[in-house]
Image (tube, rainbow, N blue to C red; front, top):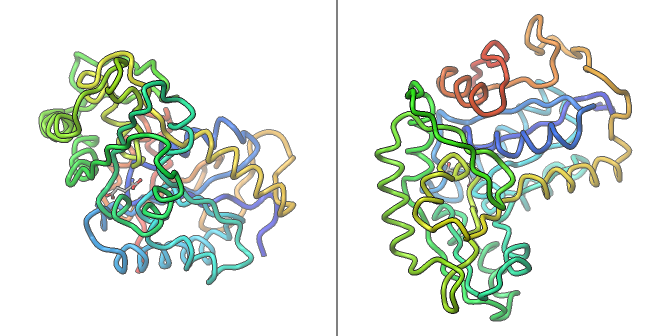
Length: 310
Ligand code: DGL
C-alpha cells in the first residue's frame, strides 16, 4: 500500500517526458520519482490507440507492482489521449495526472487570435482532442499539424554525441532550456516541413503568434522551431501546469511528502547505492535515456537502468 514516502511514477513513450519530470522535480523537491521511458515501443504517435492503451496499462501495472508508486503522471499526450479514461477506471484509487495540448493557456496568450498546434497524429486525431477543440467554440483560429516521424527522429538523435558548437538555451515562453541535438539534420528537415505547411507565424494580424507544443518530445527541437517561427512567437507547453496539478491531486489524496531532504531508498527495486530522488528506467537503450537525462536534467547516467515491461 503506497504511502506519502512512496515514489511518483512518471512515464512517456521515450525521453520526451523528461521535460515534465524536470518541472515535477522543481516543484516537489521532497518527492521521489520513478521515470519510465518506453523507448523500445516508441514512437506511440503513429501506432494506433489499442497499441498505446495496452502499453499504458502494462506500464501502470508494472510501476504499481514493482515500485509501489503512489501516483502516476502520464507524461505523454498520446498515451493520455488513448488511455487515460480506461486507466482511471482500472485503477480507481491511484491518483493519475495526464497531459493534453495546452490549448486554453494558448487562448489566454494569443493576441492575434491565431494559434498553431503541433503534436502526434495519435493525439491530434483523438476523440479527446476533438472534444477539446469543439469546446472552444471558435474562440481562435487554430492550425493543427500532426508531425509524423518527428518524435521518433528526436528519440534517435538525442543519444548521439554532442557537437562542439552547442546551441544556446531557448529563452522564450516555453519554460525549459532546449537541449543540444547531436545530428539535427533529420529533425530540422521535419520541423521545416511541418512549420512551413502551417502558414505564417509572427505577431502581425492574421499570423500565428502562439505555438502549442502538444508532444513532450518537441521541446528537444525548440531551437529548430524557434529558427523557423521567429523570435516573437510564444511557445506553450505543459510541464509546470502538470506539476501543479500533481501537487493538487497528491494533497487531496493525503499523499504529499512533507519530509524534507533526500528520500531514502524504499524497496528492493531501487537502484543500488543511489540516493534515489529519481530512478530512470527504460525498455530501450540505456544510453539514449542516460544521454538525455544527463544533458537535459544533469542527472547521473548511473541512475538509469534497463527494464522489460510485457
Ligand atoms: N511524447 C509523446 C507525446 O507527448 C509521444 C511521442 C511518440 O512516441 O510519438 O505525445
